[in-house]
Every structure is written in structure tokens, then in C-alpha cells.
Length: 59
Image 1 (spheres, rainbow, N blue to C red):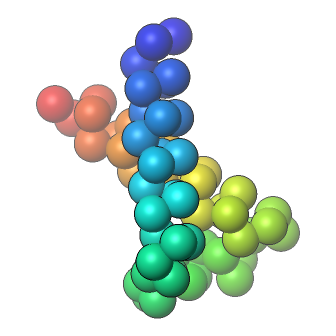
Image 2 (image 1 turned 90 degrees about the vertical axis):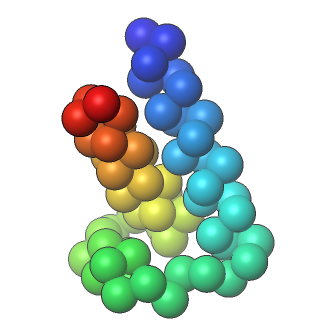
């Protein structure tokens, strides 16, 4: 449970940083945002959560 909480914290921080700095121009992120029916912030968070979790799982 704590691993998922840490991943969620990281994904939240990354999401906030990307949105505050308007760094959502990444092609991959744009594809995720367009294909999602969720609000932009939720789509970005979900994408980052899965990405961070996968990276930590590899290690």
C-alpha cells in the first residue's frame, strides 16, 4: 500500500509541475489527453501514475 501511495505522491507532484509550467506539449501526453474522456488533469495523472509505477517495478 505504501508503494502505491508514494507513486501517487510522485505522480501528483509531476502533474502539478507539468500543468503549472504548461509543459503538456509532449506528443505522448497529448495523445493520452485526446484519447481520454476524463478531464485533462486526471488523464495526465493516470498516465504519470502508470509510468512511475512501471519504472519502480522494473527496479
